[in-house]
Length: 93
Image 1: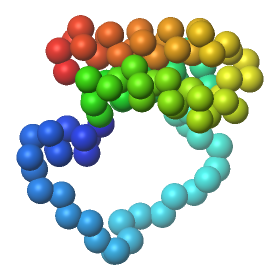
Image 2: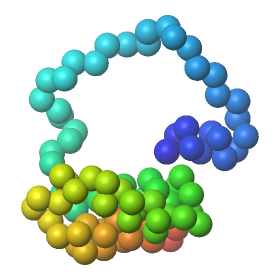
Image 3: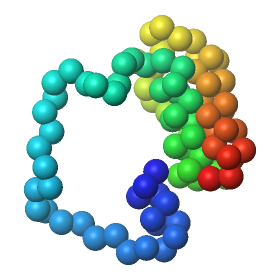
């Protein structure tokens, strides 16, 4: 969301090939699983990216990433994502 916010505010963004850090793929301390919060946050993210096409972005994400739908139905995941989208708008972000 940070980069999207920078782009919307017409800030200049530069890229570099320099190494800024190292990532260790050990057990995550912040990501628990694909759950309601995961889909809620994705809905908010897609709304931040493009409010006008948020439903299309949400739908295409669920269609393209069916592997995330093993423990949750398509409808329920869609509902959580729309709730996240609506919450993002309600907060006035």
